[in-house]
Amino acid sequence: MGDAGNAAWMLTSASLVFLMTPGVAFFYGGMVRAKAVLNMLMLSTAALAVTGVVWTFWGWSIAYAGTDIGGIFGDPATGFLLKDTMVATNGVWGSVDGGSDAAYPPSINVAFQVTFAMITVALITGALAERIKFSTWMIFVALWITFVYAPMAHMVWNGGLLSPDGAISQAIGAQAHDFAGGTVVHINAAVAALVTVLIIGKRKGFPKEPFRPHNVPFVMLGAFLLWFGWFGFNAGSAFAANGTAGYTWVSTTAATSAATLGWLFTEKIRSGHYTAMGAASGMVAGLVAITPAADVVSPLWAMVLGLIAGILCCFAVGLKFKLGYDDSLDVVGVHGVGGLTGTVLVGFFAQDTGLFAGGDYKQLLVQIVIALVAILYSGVLTAIISFALEKTVGWRVTEAQEVGGVDLADQGERAYDFAGTASSILKGVK
Image (tube, rainbow, N blue to C red; front, side):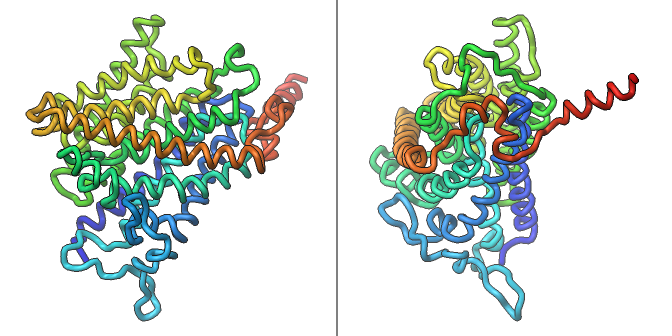
Protein backbone atom coordinates (compact mmCIF):
# COMPACT_ATOMS: atom_id res chain seq x y z
CA MET A 1 0.00 0.00 0.00
CA GLY A 2 2.95 2.31 -0.47
CA ASP A 3 5.44 4.14 1.68
CA ALA A 4 4.17 5.66 4.96
CA GLY A 5 6.31 8.77 4.51
CA ASN A 6 4.87 9.42 1.05
CA ALA A 7 1.35 8.84 2.36
CA ALA A 8 1.88 11.29 5.22
CA TRP A 9 3.31 13.93 2.88
CA MET A 10 0.48 13.60 0.37
CA LEU A 11 -2.21 13.85 3.07
CA THR A 12 -0.43 16.95 4.36
CA SER A 13 -0.25 18.37 0.83
CA ALA A 14 -3.96 17.74 0.29
CA SER A 15 -4.70 19.64 3.49
CA LEU A 16 -2.43 22.51 2.44
CA VAL A 17 -4.15 22.81 -0.94
CA PHE A 18 -7.55 22.69 0.79
CA LEU A 19 -6.43 25.70 2.86
CA MET A 20 -5.85 27.65 -0.35
CA THR A 21 -9.58 28.03 -0.99
CA PRO A 22 -10.17 29.77 2.38
CA GLY A 23 -7.06 31.78 1.45
CA VAL A 24 -8.73 32.85 -1.78
CA ALA A 25 -11.85 33.72 0.19
CA PHE A 26 -9.90 36.15 2.39
CA PHE A 27 -7.83 37.44 -0.53
CA TYR A 28 -10.92 38.28 -2.56
CA GLY A 29 -13.05 39.15 0.47
CA GLY A 30 -10.73 41.95 1.48
CA MET A 31 -10.69 43.39 -2.03
CA VAL A 32 -14.45 43.95 -2.32
CA ARG A 33 -16.51 46.63 -0.61
CA ALA A 34 -17.81 45.96 2.88
CA LYS A 35 -21.30 45.24 1.59
CA ALA A 36 -20.12 42.21 -0.40
CA VAL A 37 -17.49 40.51 1.74
CA LEU A 38 -19.74 37.78 3.14
CA ASN A 39 -20.89 36.89 -0.34
CA MET A 40 -17.27 36.47 -1.47
CA LEU A 41 -16.59 34.16 1.46
CA MET A 42 -19.75 32.21 0.64
CA LEU A 43 -18.83 31.81 -3.03
CA SER A 44 -15.65 30.03 -1.92
CA THR A 45 -17.73 27.97 0.51
CA ALA A 46 -19.88 26.84 -2.40
CA ALA A 47 -16.75 26.00 -4.40
CA LEU A 48 -15.70 23.66 -1.60
CA ALA A 49 -19.09 22.10 -0.91
CA VAL A 50 -20.46 21.62 -4.43
CA THR A 51 -17.14 20.40 -5.82
CA GLY A 52 -16.79 17.90 -2.98
CA VAL A 53 -20.13 16.32 -3.88
CA VAL A 54 -19.62 16.37 -7.65
CA TRP A 55 -16.11 14.92 -7.33
CA THR A 56 -17.36 12.06 -5.17
CA PHE A 57 -20.16 11.17 -7.56
CA TRP A 58 -18.53 11.46 -10.99
CA GLY A 59 -15.82 14.16 -11.15
CA TRP A 60 -13.04 11.82 -10.04
CA SER A 61 -14.07 9.27 -12.63
CA ILE A 62 -14.15 11.80 -15.47
CA ALA A 63 -10.72 13.16 -14.54
CA TYR A 64 -8.77 10.10 -13.44
CA ALA A 65 -10.65 6.83 -13.10
CA GLY A 66 -12.77 6.38 -16.19
CA THR A 67 -11.82 4.75 -19.47
CA ASP A 68 -10.35 7.37 -21.81
CA ILE A 69 -12.73 8.77 -24.42
CA GLY A 70 -11.02 10.58 -27.28
CA GLY A 71 -8.20 11.84 -25.09
CA ILE A 72 -10.60 14.42 -23.63
CA PHE A 73 -12.33 12.78 -20.65
CA GLY A 74 -12.82 9.54 -18.80
CA ASP A 75 -16.18 7.83 -18.56
CA PRO A 76 -18.11 8.85 -15.44
CA ALA A 77 -19.15 5.29 -14.55
CA THR A 78 -15.87 3.50 -13.75
CA GLY A 79 -15.13 5.56 -10.65
CA PHE A 80 -18.72 6.60 -9.86
CA LEU A 81 -19.03 7.16 -6.10
CA LEU A 82 -15.32 6.27 -5.87
CA LYS A 83 -16.05 2.57 -6.34
CA ASP A 84 -12.70 2.08 -8.05
CA THR A 85 -10.80 3.48 -5.08
CA MET A 86 -12.64 2.88 -1.82
CA VAL A 87 -13.43 -0.48 -0.26
CA ALA A 88 -14.82 -1.73 3.06
CA THR A 89 -12.94 -4.46 4.90
CA ASN A 90 -14.49 -5.98 8.00
CA GLY A 91 -16.87 -3.07 8.22
CA VAL A 92 -14.21 -0.38 7.99
CA TRP A 93 -13.80 1.76 4.88
CA GLY A 94 -10.37 2.32 3.39
CA SER A 95 -8.52 2.20 0.10
CA VAL A 96 -8.19 -0.48 -2.53
CA ASP A 97 -4.69 -1.89 -2.86
CA GLY A 98 -2.73 0.28 -5.24
CA GLY A 99 -0.20 -2.48 -5.90
CA SER A 100 3.46 -2.85 -5.06
CA ASP A 101 4.46 0.15 -7.18
CA ALA A 102 2.05 2.58 -5.52
CA ALA A 103 3.75 5.38 -3.60
CA TYR A 104 0.70 5.75 -1.34
CA PRO A 105 -2.90 4.42 -1.16
CA PRO A 106 -5.11 5.50 -4.11
CA SER A 107 -7.66 7.03 -1.75
CA ILE A 108 -5.13 9.74 -0.89
CA ASN A 109 -4.95 10.74 -4.54
CA VAL A 110 -8.72 11.32 -4.54
CA ALA A 111 -8.25 13.66 -1.60
CA PHE A 112 -5.33 15.50 -3.19
CA GLN A 113 -7.00 15.96 -6.56
CA VAL A 114 -10.35 17.22 -5.26
CA THR A 115 -8.59 20.12 -3.55
CA PHE A 116 -7.22 21.21 -6.94
CA ALA A 117 -10.72 21.20 -8.38
CA MET A 118 -11.98 23.26 -5.44
CA ILE A 119 -9.36 25.99 -5.67
CA THR A 120 -9.63 26.23 -9.46
CA VAL A 121 -13.34 27.00 -9.56
CA ALA A 122 -13.00 29.30 -6.52
CA LEU A 123 -10.54 31.47 -8.47
CA ILE A 124 -13.29 32.42 -10.92
CA THR A 125 -15.28 34.17 -8.19
CA GLY A 126 -12.89 37.12 -8.16
CA ALA A 127 -14.09 38.21 -11.58
CA LEU A 128 -17.78 38.02 -10.66
CA ALA A 129 -17.68 39.90 -7.37
CA GLU A 130 -20.52 42.00 -5.98
CA ARG A 131 -23.22 41.14 -8.52
CA ILE A 132 -24.10 37.45 -8.90
CA LYS A 133 -26.70 35.20 -7.33
CA PHE A 134 -25.39 32.58 -4.93
CA SER A 135 -27.86 30.02 -6.27
CA THR A 136 -26.69 30.48 -9.87
CA TRP A 137 -23.09 30.18 -8.74
CA MET A 138 -23.77 26.79 -7.12
CA ILE A 139 -25.26 25.47 -10.35
CA PHE A 140 -22.32 26.86 -12.31
CA VAL A 141 -19.81 25.09 -10.03
CA ALA A 142 -21.48 21.72 -10.57
CA LEU A 143 -21.60 22.14 -14.35
CA TRP A 144 -18.14 23.65 -14.70
CA ILE A 145 -16.38 20.97 -12.65
CA THR A 146 -18.19 18.30 -14.67
CA PHE A 147 -17.70 19.62 -18.19
CA VAL A 148 -14.62 21.85 -17.98
CA TYR A 149 -12.31 21.16 -15.04
CA ALA A 150 -12.50 17.36 -14.85
CA PRO A 151 -11.96 16.88 -18.62
CA MET A 152 -9.08 19.38 -18.57
CA ALA A 153 -7.43 17.51 -15.71
CA HIS A 154 -7.86 14.29 -17.68
CA MET A 155 -6.36 15.84 -20.82
CA VAL A 156 -3.25 17.14 -19.05
CA TRP A 157 -2.61 14.78 -16.14
CA ASN A 158 -4.14 11.46 -17.10
CA GLY A 159 -2.68 10.67 -20.49
CA GLY A 160 -5.11 12.73 -22.54
CA LEU A 161 -4.71 15.12 -25.45
CA LEU A 162 -2.54 17.68 -23.64
CA SER A 163 -0.40 15.25 -21.65
CA PRO A 164 3.30 14.45 -22.22
CA ASP A 165 2.21 11.29 -24.06
CA GLY A 166 -0.79 12.86 -25.79
CA ALA A 167 -1.42 13.39 -29.47
CA ILE A 168 -0.14 16.99 -29.48
CA SER A 169 3.18 16.07 -27.86
CA GLN A 170 3.63 13.17 -30.24
CA ALA A 171 2.89 15.31 -33.27
CA ILE A 172 5.38 18.02 -32.28
CA GLY A 173 8.04 15.68 -30.93
CA ALA A 174 8.35 17.21 -27.45
CA GLN A 175 6.61 16.41 -24.18
CA ALA A 176 4.13 19.01 -22.96
CA HIS A 177 4.88 20.05 -19.40
CA ASP A 178 2.42 21.36 -16.83
CA PHE A 179 3.76 20.32 -13.44
CA ALA A 180 1.00 21.57 -11.16
CA GLY A 181 -1.62 23.46 -13.13
CA GLY A 182 -0.63 26.32 -15.43
CA THR A 183 -3.22 25.15 -17.95
CA VAL A 184 -5.55 23.04 -15.80
CA VAL A 185 -5.91 25.57 -12.99
CA HIS A 186 -4.86 29.10 -13.90
CA ILE A 187 -5.43 29.51 -17.64
CA ASN A 188 -8.59 27.44 -17.28
CA ALA A 189 -10.03 29.56 -14.45
CA ALA A 190 -9.00 32.89 -15.99
CA VAL A 191 -10.55 32.14 -19.38
CA ALA A 192 -13.74 30.96 -17.67
CA ALA A 193 -13.77 34.15 -15.62
CA LEU A 194 -13.34 36.38 -18.66
CA VAL A 195 -16.02 34.60 -20.69
CA THR A 196 -18.52 34.71 -17.84
CA VAL A 197 -17.83 38.40 -17.15
CA LEU A 198 -18.50 39.24 -20.79
CA ILE A 199 -21.84 37.42 -20.54
CA ILE A 200 -23.06 38.83 -17.23
CA GLY A 201 -21.85 42.41 -17.70
CA LYS A 202 -20.28 45.09 -15.54
CA ARG A 203 -21.00 46.19 -12.01
CA LYS A 204 -23.09 49.33 -11.68
CA GLY A 205 -20.72 52.28 -11.82
CA PHE A 206 -17.79 50.51 -13.48
CA PRO A 207 -15.36 51.99 -14.46
CA LYS A 208 -16.30 55.51 -13.33
CA GLU A 209 -16.85 54.81 -9.63
CA PRO A 210 -13.98 53.75 -7.36
CA PHE A 211 -14.18 50.17 -6.11
CA ARG A 212 -11.70 50.23 -3.26
CA PRO A 213 -10.80 47.22 -1.09
CA HIS A 214 -12.51 47.44 2.26
CA ASN A 215 -9.96 45.41 4.24
CA VAL A 216 -6.37 45.27 3.00
CA PRO A 217 -5.19 43.14 5.96
CA PHE A 218 -7.68 40.47 4.76
CA VAL A 219 -6.04 40.61 1.36
CA MET A 220 -2.58 40.18 2.87
CA LEU A 221 -3.80 37.33 5.07
CA GLY A 222 -5.25 35.60 2.03
CA ALA A 223 -2.00 36.03 0.09
CA PHE A 224 0.08 34.59 2.92
CA LEU A 225 -2.30 31.63 3.25
CA LEU A 226 -2.05 31.04 -0.49
CA TRP A 227 1.75 31.06 -0.38
CA PHE A 228 1.69 28.60 2.52
CA GLY A 229 -0.86 26.36 0.81
CA TRP A 230 1.09 26.49 -2.45
CA PHE A 231 3.81 24.32 -0.90
CA GLY A 232 1.28 21.50 -0.97
CA PHE A 233 0.09 22.57 -4.41
CA ASN A 234 3.55 22.48 -6.02
CA ALA A 235 5.70 20.29 -3.78
CA GLY A 236 2.79 17.86 -3.40
CA SER A 237 2.71 17.48 -7.17
CA ALA A 238 5.95 15.50 -6.90
CA PHE A 239 3.64 12.76 -5.47
CA ALA A 240 6.34 11.66 -3.03
CA ALA A 241 8.40 12.95 -0.12
CA ASN A 242 11.53 13.22 -2.21
CA GLY A 243 14.11 15.60 -3.64
CA THR A 244 11.76 16.87 -6.33
CA ALA A 245 9.27 17.92 -3.66
CA GLY A 246 12.05 19.70 -1.80
CA TYR A 247 13.27 21.47 -4.90
CA THR A 248 9.82 22.65 -5.95
CA TRP A 249 9.40 24.14 -2.46
CA VAL A 250 12.58 26.11 -3.10
CA SER A 251 11.79 27.13 -6.68
CA THR A 252 8.29 28.18 -5.66
CA THR A 253 9.66 30.47 -2.97
CA ALA A 254 12.41 31.89 -5.20
CA ALA A 255 10.01 32.70 -8.04
CA THR A 256 7.37 34.17 -5.73
CA SER A 257 9.92 36.34 -3.95
CA ALA A 258 11.19 37.69 -7.27
CA ALA A 259 7.66 38.30 -8.54
CA THR A 260 6.75 40.21 -5.40
CA LEU A 261 9.78 42.46 -5.82
CA GLY A 262 9.12 42.85 -9.54
CA TRP A 263 5.55 44.01 -8.90
CA LEU A 264 6.59 46.35 -6.08
CA PHE A 265 9.41 48.02 -8.04
CA THR A 266 7.14 48.43 -11.06
CA GLU A 267 4.49 49.96 -8.83
CA LYS A 268 7.00 52.30 -7.18
CA ILE A 269 8.14 53.60 -10.57
CA ARG A 270 4.55 54.10 -11.74
CA SER A 271 2.90 55.51 -8.61
CA GLY A 272 5.63 56.34 -6.13
CA HIS A 273 4.49 53.77 -3.56
CA TYR A 274 5.14 50.19 -2.49
CA THR A 275 1.58 49.14 -1.64
CA ALA A 276 0.34 46.19 0.42
CA MET A 277 -2.12 45.39 -2.36
CA GLY A 278 0.78 45.28 -4.78
CA ALA A 279 2.77 42.98 -2.53
CA ALA A 280 -0.16 40.59 -2.17
CA SER A 281 -0.86 40.59 -5.90
CA GLY A 282 2.82 40.11 -6.72
CA MET A 283 2.95 37.07 -4.44
CA VAL A 284 0.04 35.46 -6.23
CA ALA A 285 1.45 36.32 -9.67
CA GLY A 286 4.70 34.54 -8.82
CA LEU A 287 2.94 31.53 -7.34
CA VAL A 288 0.80 31.21 -10.45
CA ALA A 289 3.69 31.56 -12.90
CA ILE A 290 6.01 29.00 -11.28
CA THR A 291 3.25 26.38 -11.02
CA PRO A 292 3.73 24.71 -14.44
CA ALA A 293 7.53 24.97 -14.30
CA ALA A 294 8.52 24.35 -10.68
CA ASP A 295 10.35 21.06 -11.23
CA VAL A 296 12.22 21.84 -14.46
CA VAL A 297 13.67 25.35 -14.06
CA SER A 298 16.93 26.12 -12.28
CA PRO A 299 16.98 28.45 -9.26
CA LEU A 300 18.16 31.30 -11.50
CA TRP A 301 15.51 30.74 -14.15
CA ALA A 302 12.85 30.36 -11.43
CA MET A 303 13.65 33.86 -10.22
CA VAL A 304 13.78 35.25 -13.75
CA LEU A 305 10.42 33.65 -14.48
CA GLY A 306 8.96 35.13 -11.31
CA LEU A 307 10.37 38.58 -12.02
CA ILE A 308 8.91 38.59 -15.54
CA ALA A 309 5.52 37.46 -14.23
CA GLY A 310 5.45 40.11 -11.50
CA ILE A 311 6.15 42.90 -13.97
CA LEU A 312 3.78 41.61 -16.67
CA CYS A 313 0.90 41.00 -14.28
CA CYS A 314 1.35 44.44 -12.71
CA PHE A 315 0.76 45.99 -16.12
CA ALA A 316 -1.92 43.45 -17.14
CA VAL A 317 -4.35 44.31 -14.34
CA GLY A 318 -4.96 47.64 -16.06
CA LEU A 319 -6.17 46.01 -19.27
CA LYS A 320 -9.75 45.77 -18.00
CA PHE A 321 -10.04 49.55 -17.99
CA LYS A 322 -8.64 49.86 -21.50
CA LEU A 323 -10.69 47.00 -22.93
CA GLY A 324 -13.85 47.62 -20.91
CA TYR A 325 -14.47 44.27 -19.22
CA ASP A 326 -15.23 44.23 -15.49
CA ASP A 327 -12.96 41.55 -14.06
CA SER A 328 -13.62 42.75 -10.54
CA LEU A 329 -10.53 41.42 -8.74
CA ASP A 330 -8.13 40.82 -11.65
CA VAL A 331 -8.43 37.10 -12.21
CA VAL A 332 -7.48 37.56 -15.86
CA GLY A 333 -4.61 39.93 -15.16
CA VAL A 334 -3.01 37.77 -12.46
CA HIS A 335 -4.05 34.16 -13.08
CA GLY A 336 -4.54 34.36 -16.82
CA VAL A 337 -1.40 36.34 -17.64
CA GLY A 338 0.62 34.61 -14.90
CA GLY A 339 -0.51 31.12 -15.93
CA LEU A 340 0.14 31.80 -19.60
CA THR A 341 3.55 33.32 -18.80
CA GLY A 342 4.65 30.32 -16.74
CA THR A 343 3.34 27.80 -19.25
CA VAL A 344 5.08 29.44 -22.20
CA LEU A 345 8.34 30.16 -20.35
CA VAL A 346 8.76 26.43 -19.73
CA GLY A 347 9.61 26.42 -23.43
CA PHE A 348 12.50 28.81 -22.77
CA PHE A 349 13.75 27.84 -19.31
CA ALA A 350 13.13 24.08 -18.88
CA GLN A 351 16.31 22.17 -18.14
CA ASP A 352 17.70 20.40 -21.24
CA THR A 353 14.59 21.05 -23.36
CA GLY A 354 13.96 24.80 -23.11
CA LEU A 355 15.24 27.14 -25.80
CA PHE A 356 17.60 28.94 -23.37
CA ALA A 357 18.54 25.87 -21.32
CA GLY A 358 19.88 23.35 -23.79
CA GLY A 359 16.93 22.41 -25.97
CA ASP A 360 15.38 23.59 -29.21
CA TYR A 361 12.18 25.22 -30.38
CA LYS A 362 9.97 22.13 -29.96
CA GLN A 363 9.42 22.53 -26.22
CA LEU A 364 8.36 26.13 -26.75
CA LEU A 365 6.05 25.13 -29.58
CA VAL A 366 4.30 22.41 -27.61
CA GLN A 367 3.84 24.76 -24.62
CA ILE A 368 2.21 27.39 -26.82
CA VAL A 369 -0.07 24.84 -28.46
CA ILE A 370 -1.31 23.30 -25.20
CA ALA A 371 -1.97 26.78 -23.81
CA LEU A 372 -4.01 27.70 -26.88
CA VAL A 373 -6.00 24.45 -26.75
CA ALA A 374 -6.70 25.01 -23.04
CA ILE A 375 -7.91 28.55 -23.79
CA LEU A 376 -10.15 27.33 -26.59
CA TYR A 377 -11.64 24.42 -24.65
CA SER A 378 -12.29 26.41 -21.49
CA GLY A 379 -13.65 29.38 -23.42
CA VAL A 380 -16.12 27.46 -25.55
CA LEU A 381 -17.44 25.15 -22.82
CA THR A 382 -17.67 27.92 -20.24
CA ALA A 383 -19.50 30.16 -22.72
CA ILE A 384 -22.12 27.46 -23.27
CA ILE A 385 -22.61 26.94 -19.53
CA SER A 386 -22.67 30.63 -18.57
CA PHE A 387 -24.93 31.63 -21.46
CA ALA A 388 -27.38 28.84 -20.62
CA LEU A 389 -27.52 29.98 -17.00
CA GLU A 390 -27.98 33.61 -18.05
CA LYS A 391 -30.98 32.66 -20.21
CA THR A 392 -32.59 30.39 -17.62
CA VAL A 393 -32.03 31.18 -13.93
CA GLY A 394 -30.11 34.43 -14.54
CA TRP A 395 -26.75 35.46 -13.12
CA ARG A 396 -27.36 38.92 -11.68
CA VAL A 397 -29.00 40.19 -8.53
CA THR A 398 -31.26 43.17 -9.18
CA GLU A 399 -29.76 46.64 -9.49
CA ALA A 400 -31.30 47.66 -6.17
CA GLN A 401 -29.82 44.58 -4.49
CA GLU A 402 -26.41 45.31 -5.97
CA VAL A 403 -26.50 48.90 -4.72
CA GLY A 404 -27.73 47.82 -1.30
CA GLY A 405 -25.15 45.07 -1.10
CA VAL A 406 -25.20 41.46 -2.23
CA ASP A 407 -24.57 40.35 1.36
CA LEU A 408 -28.04 41.50 2.40
CA ALA A 409 -29.63 40.35 -0.85
CA ASP A 410 -28.28 36.78 -0.80
CA GLN A 411 -27.08 36.05 2.72
CA GLY A 412 -29.45 38.30 4.66
CA GLU A 413 -26.50 39.35 6.83
CA ARG A 414 -23.92 42.09 7.19
CA ALA A 415 -20.24 41.50 7.83
CA TYR A 416 -19.96 44.56 10.06
CA ASP A 417 -22.62 46.04 12.31
CA PHE A 418 -21.75 49.67 11.66
CA ALA A 419 -25.15 50.91 12.83
CA GLY A 420 -24.93 48.96 16.07
CA THR A 421 -21.40 50.18 16.72
CA ALA A 422 -22.39 53.79 16.11
CA SER A 423 -25.41 53.40 18.42
CA SER A 424 -23.22 51.97 21.18
CA ILE A 425 -20.78 54.86 20.86
CA LEU A 426 -23.56 57.42 21.02
CA LYS A 427 -25.05 55.76 24.11
CA GLY A 428 -21.64 55.87 25.76
CA VAL A 429 -21.34 59.58 25.01
CA LYS A 430 -24.72 60.26 26.57
